[in-house]
Image (cartoon, rainbow, N blue to C red):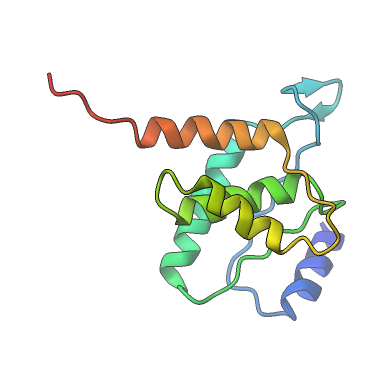
Length: 130
């Protein structure tokens, strides 16, 4: 936890209003021994947290820090960007994310993006009158 506190302080220059700490492994299955993969609940927690932060500070920043900053944080960042855009603008979200990838290293974690896509489809499913 001390490393996480230090990383957040460095990334935000100490200007932190809220913190959501999630720990999970970069695996494509729910569990493997002591390793835990991403779940729908984790992705939902990030999207809800991001939405609340956007409401509280529309011009604020959300910092996502991962162990290697390649897969999990890229996928969570993509979920936040896409969540800010209208449904059907997922390609624009991907382009916005990749524009920030100056080293060309990002490859969003497929289970995370899959969880987010399923949750988004459920939220924006057209309602059928009864």
